[in-house]
Image (tube, rainbow, N blue to C red; front, side):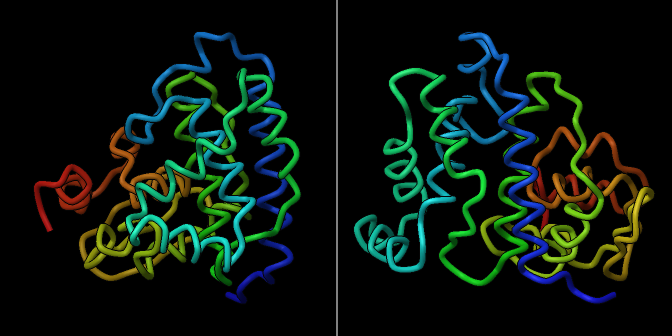
Length: 216
C-alpha cells in the first residue's frame, strides 16, 4: 500500500482539528474541566497542548527541550501553559487559530496526525462524544504506531502481536491476533486502556498487560 503524501496527511490533520474544535464549541465550564484520558490533564489543558504542538517547529522544540533538560513532561507543561487562555473560550480561540498549521519538529507527519487523533479521543471519550475519525486518517497512524515508538510506546505495545482492523485495511505484525476497529487499535497502542474493551482475540490479554504496565 502506497504511503500517503505528507500534504495529504496534513490535510487530514487540519480536518481533524476542525472537527474537534466544532465538538468543543458547546461545552459547559464544567465539561472544560473534566479529566481526560491523558493523565491528569483536563479538557482545556489538552486543547492548549494541541495548540502548542501545532506552534513548535524544529528549532523551537530543540530550545524548549534544552531548557527542560530533555524532560518531555516539563517541555509539554511549559508550552501548554503558554497556550492556555484566561477562559476556555479563549483557549478554544487559540486552538482555532492553528487548525491549518503544518508546523512540526520533525518530518514524522503520521505521528503528528496521530497526536490530534489520539488527544481528540482523550477528550471525546470522557465527554461521551462519539465522533469517529476517518479511516483515511486512522490507517497511516495505525501503521506508524505499529512500527515504532515515537511519542508513545506503541511499537512496544504492538510487538509480537498480529493486529487487524475489522473496518479498514490496517493489518500489521505476526503473533497472537488482536482485532477491532482501527480507532480502538490506535488508541490501545497509544496506551489508552478503555479502548482495550473494544478489542477481541487471543492477543488482547498480552496487549492489556503491556498497556496496564504489568507485562512486556
